[in-house]
Image (cartoon, rainbow, N blue to C red):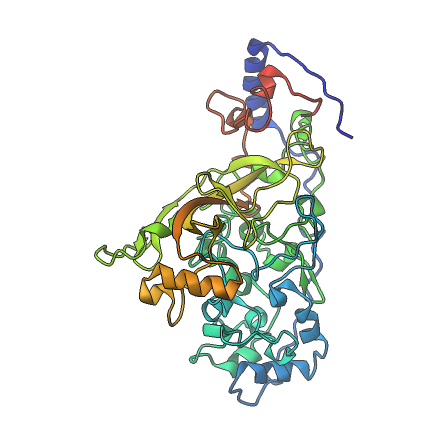
Amino acid sequence: MLRSFKYIWLLGLIGTILVVAGVIALALSPLRGVAPDPWANVPPERTHVDHSDLMTEPFETGPEVTAACLSCHEDAAHEVSRTTHWTWQSEPVTVAWRDEPVSTGKANVINNFCIGIQSNEPDCTRCHAGYGWGAEEPFDFEDLSNVDCLVCHDQSGGYVKAEEGLPAEEVDLLAAAQSVGSPTRANCGGCHFNGGGGNGVKHGDLDSSLYFPSENLDVHMGGLDFQCIDCHQTQDHQIAGRSISVSLDDANQVYCTDCHETTLHSDERITSHVDTVACQTCHIPTVAVRDRTRILWDWSAAGDLARENVPGQYLQTRGEFMTTLDYQPDYTWYNGTAQRYLLGDTMDPATLTVLDPPLGDLDDPTALIFPFKIHYARQPYDAEYNILLQPTTAGEGGYWTTFDWNSALASGAEAAGIPYSGSYGFAETAMYWPLTHMVQPASNALTCADCHSDNGRMDWEALGYFGDPLVWGGREVGR
């Protein structure tokens, strides 16, 4: 049942006075009492065994290293096989917008970056936690010898994955095996900082600047030297955390309140926002602070062989890009779940198709105003069936080799199991990326005037209010 609403009308003059007073109060407001120990909710890191004397024989292949690992860690590969880092697919989830449970993952979702993996597996699976996932034959998810232990545990700094997720030829597998330890930002970042085709492309709040960040860039990773697994805590290889780019539910999520109390602020006006405003909204004022992030990808401009390639702006194989620094987030209500465009869903090419619209609104008591990066694209669709298409881009016969959209779309559609009429166009799409990293020091957090002013960053009417709730009053107490 929705909460009862109360219309409160405030005079504009009083609202203006409160804005000014609030800015002064926030600038002077200390935290309540002594700040808690930031490590109090982080499990102590166990001393990792030195493997330099345990791994002595030369290794020719990745699976040989895995076999050596499993001689002691007998259950490890089985545990990995139950994770989405291995399956790239979720368990079925019941959702309000489908009649049947939906299982999502890289096998059946489409994005507006590299678009999809079907028929592009050799290139995409460089970031799979396994070996040998190609395009010719289905990958055997039951063959645990192909679990890649090194991608998460190598500490030599020299481990690199090539096509089909296999170790690159230059990798010294023995040195990598002898170096193993707990995963660091380098292990996680190798894939997560470079998703979508390059550094910082997708997320905006994840890029190579986080390998060695300053405190001003990220208070957790820079000021406290947190590793990814300190927040994304892991048990039996199940890593906490998920993204609406592929996930539908809010299970296995990481929250600020896992460590921080909601009553942390001494100013009650700030505390009163906790029920409606996410911590990230105030404490992540911008992302892409040092490295640029992509905000537009226009596939329709690809294939102009007379046009010069300019990294970050134009590539003949991929089209036109727009990137930015110091990206100011967009804000919308978010209850931790999202809807999702799936392969074969119909769309309207005359309107913007949002592939993963966040769910929640002003009337949803579980929703918070949350910061997002929005990435826009123009990508191929079937002009007869009105569905987004999944092209073959990489490898022999792929668009990056042939520059022939028709054959690339026909091949990709066949691999993805969707129809292709032979007629295509390019449609505008958008994807939402929740921003949870690059938490800046409290001194950089948003103040009242950043939101409650004529030039504030909130679009109050889009959020469901009549206008700035400080001036016009909220539709609901606390809202």
